[in-house]
Image 1 (cartoon, each protein chain N blue to C red):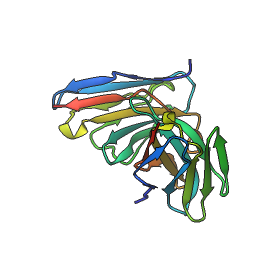
Image 2 (cartoon, rainbow over the protein chains, first blue to last red; image 1 turned 90 degrees about the vertical axis):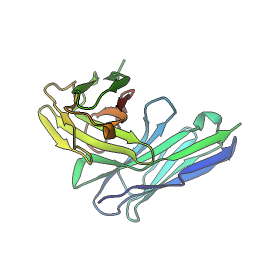
Image 3 (cartoon, one colour; image 1 turned 45 degrees about the horizontal axis):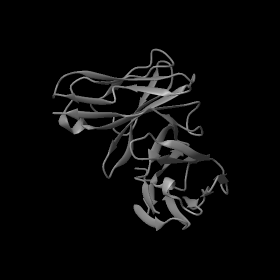
Length: 113
Length: 113
């Protein structure tokens, strides 16, 4: 059974703090790793899709890195703002079945003004 | 506007009464998928479709049916709903499997009494 784990489960930070969370996935048969942001009462929205070991992606204050050999990805938020409050989901796609996406349980971030 | 349209947003039904949740995308995406979201369990894939007339089971397909007769539509059918199918459901689509980001519908909150 393929397992994707995210840590921490939840996080409370002050406005202006920088933060990061982790997504762990199987290190074999890697195909792609997705990150999504899911705000309350909305639908998940894509942040990044990464496919190569060592990939780094950036979108504004949010960036992500990927290590496929050891099976983890980090998501960083620099200078957190209240509008960054959301649940951040990662999803793993493996080469054995590229139609399947396995999601982690998410990290819920709360940024206090 | 490029979007994935899901209907209805909310549905309350009774055990055993067949229902269909519709999903339509206007982006000419080949790949479509259904997920359910339950507290503490993350998004779990129900079924997915790589293209017209091509569907496959995800991780939790029991009690669900799908069809992909046209590229734009991917309805989710519950032939005999049960209370354990009470959940938040999302439809999603993408240009291709695995390495392309998903676009999510607005979600359907289903309650089976």
